[in-house]
Amino acid sequence: MNLSINLPTVIVSLILAVIIYLDVRYLMKTGLDSCSGDCSGCGGSCKWTNDIEKARKKIAREKKIRAFLHLK
Image (cartoon, rainbow, N blue to C red; front, side, top):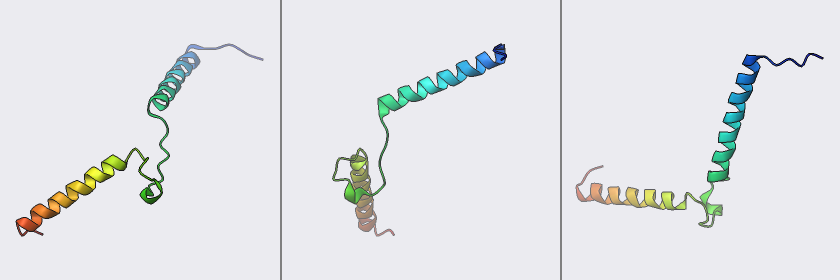
C-alpha cells in the first residue's frame, strides 16, 4: 500500500473540509427548509407566512391605486 500524501491532495482536502464546515455551520444557523409550497396545509406556522401576507397586502394596495387612477 502506498500511503504517501502529496501537496495537491492536502490542499484539495483542506478546501473540501472548509466547504463542508461552512455548509454545516450555515445549516445549523438557518435550519432546513421543509416548505412544500402548499400554504393550505401550513396552518400559519410556516416562516414564509408573513412574507406571503405582505405580498398579498401589497398586491391589494396596488389594485386599489390602479382602480382609483383608472389604470389596468
